[in-house]
Amino acid sequence: MPAPRRAALVFLIVVIALNLRPFLAAPGPILPRIAEDTGLSAGALSLLTLLPMLLMGIGAFASPPIQARYGTRRGLMVALSLLFLGAALRIFAINGAVLILTAVLCGAGVAFIQSAVPGLIKEKFSASVAGMTGLYSAMIMTGGALGAQLTPMLVESGWPWTSALAFLSLPVLLALATAARFLSETRVVRPERGLVARLLRRRRTWVLMAVFGLINGSYSSLIAWLAPYYQAQGWSGSESGALISTMAISQGFGAVILPLLARNRPDRRPWLWACIAMQAIGFTGLVVAPSAVPMLWVAICGVGLAGSFALCLIVALDHLPDPARAGPLAALMQGGGFILSGVPPLVLARIYEATGSFAGGWVMHLGWLAAAAILVARFNPERYAEAME
Image (cartoon, rainbow, N blue to C red; front, side):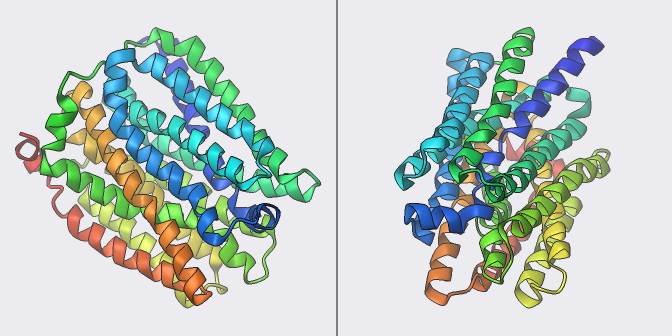
C-alpha cells in the first residue's frame, strides 16, 4: 500500500475512534445536574449507558448483513450521521425522554462502526494488526477522556449542560468529512452469505462474547457511576471528571503498550490474565481504600480495561486467517459482549438504591472478572482451527 494512502487510512481510523466514547463518558461528571433538571432517577440515568450498550450489541449482529448488502463505506457514512444527530440533539435534552433518545441514536451509530472497523484493520493492516488495533483502542479511550474532562469544564464555566453535551457533535463532522474523502479509496469487503449463521453455531463464538462482555462490563459501570461515587464523597464535577479522564488516559496507554508486548506471542492468554488482574486490583482498591489513592486505583483499572478490550479484538481476529471471516467474528463478539456489558450499570444502580453505596457494585465486578479469567483458559491458539471448524 502506498505510504500516503496508508497514512490517510490511519488518520481515518483515528478520527473515527475518537468519536466512539465521548457521548458515553460526558454525562457522568454532570449526572447530579442532569438528575436535578430532568427528574430522572438513578435507574433511569443508568439507561444512558445501558441502552447504547444494548444497541451496540444488537447492532453488531446486524452489521455483517448490512455490510454485505450496502457495503462498508455507505454503512459507515450512515452510522456516523446517526452519531452526529444523536450528539447534536442533546442541545434539546432538558427533557429526560429526549436525552435517552439521543443515547439510543448514538448507540445505534456506534454499533455499526465498532463492528466494521476491526475487519477494515484486518484487511488493510494485515502485517500490523496488533499495533493498529492498539492505536484504534487507544483513540477510543482518548475520546472518552476528552468528553469526560471537557463537559464539566464547560458547565462550570457557565454553559448549559445541554449545550456542553451537544458540543461533542462537532468532532463527528470531522470524522464524516474524513470518511467521505478517504474511505472511497478502500475496497469494500462483503461478508459471504450465511457466514453469521455459521459462526453463531460455533461454541467458541459464544465464549468470545462472554469474555468480552464480562470484562468490558467494568467499563460500563465505571463510566456511568465512578464520578457520582466520588461526588457523593464531596468531589466536584471537574474533580470527578478528572478521575474518568485519568482512567481513559490510562486506557490509551494500555491499549497501545499491551498489544505491542503481546504481538510476537500467539498465545495471548497470559496478557489477558494480567489485564484481568489489574482490573481486580483497581476494584479492590475502590472498595477497601477509595480515598487513599483513587487516581492509582482508576489508572490500574484503565490499563487493564484497555488491554483487555484490544486483546479481545486481537484474539477474535486470530481465530480466522481470512479478513472477510475474521471481521464478522469480531463483530459478533462485540455484539453479544456489549449486550452483556450493558447490564452492570443498571444492576449497580439498583444496588445503590437499595444500600446507599456503590461498594457492592464494585464487588460484583470482582465476581465477573473471576468468571472471565476462567473462560480465557480456553483461548489456546493451537486449537483455534478446531474451535472454528
